[in-house]
Length: 151
Image (cartoon, rainbow, N blue to C red; front, top):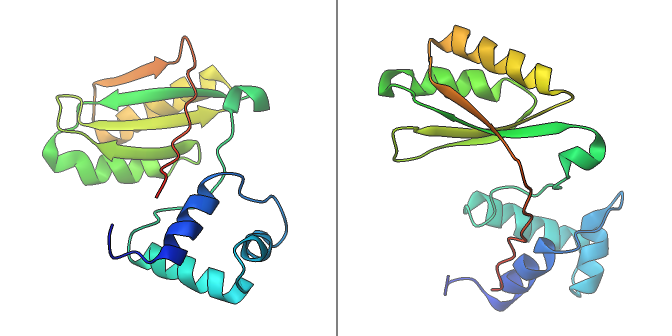
């Protein structure tokens, strides 16, 4: 982390909280960072290329938008991981998935307009991939924490 200059640290700290909802959010941010919009976009692009930033996007509370969400865990044989993740990622309701060093080695979150839609999609995924053990773990109590990393 020591090879990140002061301005990049300032940008990373700023974009983690209160990202502007604006037609030109980088212009608004650039003004608060005392730099041009083009310079900010260039720096952010470089940080994405360098894998310092994975993505920039909003987080929404599915229940407040009338949607349902669940965490899923699957036991996927090594030779089916690529097929399984490609299949899961094809569903627009999947926000992300990741591999874990565990018996349940693929985890993902799924958001849909109904519990039934989630259940139907999970059955489709099982059928398409041949993966039989796929847990549907809907939240019974929601804890929301902020993942803000001060640099």
